[in-house]
Image 1 (cartoon, one colour):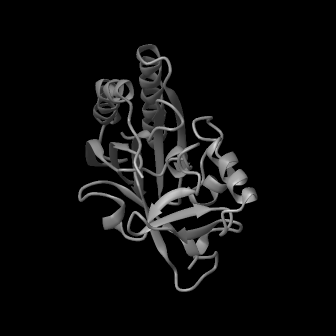
Image 2: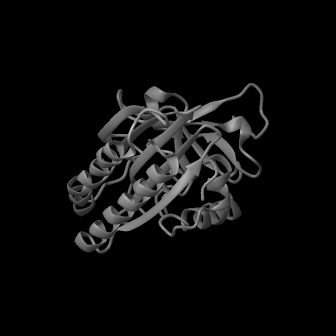
Length: 130
Length: 115
């Protein structure tokens, strides 16, 4: 059975693991992990900067709820230009009929798979847009 | 022409990227005239890219959206219409919050509720 709280905890943990890896590989990178809460959605994200002058690299996981149904999607996007470097989902699941684990695994795998792209972009410098 | 808070009709500008605090904060030393946005989605991003819509009619004072092309359709969001030293200074202070992990009040006012 799906639990939103379990899923959120798992997503935040994976974002934290990703940040730790990036901090080792690109020690100068800046990273903030936080959450935005709306009335029917919550966005968890890790926002990376090589320097404060660079455009952001934002890995966002959006969890939208409609009753007992949830839709999860994610993306890695460069700030300023809005270039989408990767996308996940959307995936829909219900609190009543599913097991949490497969969704957790897919979402967390997506998060951790962004390591190479982030390292590459951060090392290259994200550049700046208008 | 400037779009002031509470202006009617509602006016939306677009900022490429995600709705995260650092992407909705000017870059220090670069965006000295304010947060860079555009009047239309087409000006802001290429097709298939991601952008955020900001309703400038809901910007709280002293933030205003000031059209300042070029580039075409460019709009700067900053705490005052005229680029007087005080406005430039406050904009620089806003930009200095980028990458610090602290959401500046100006960012928080239209960037959603962060925790």
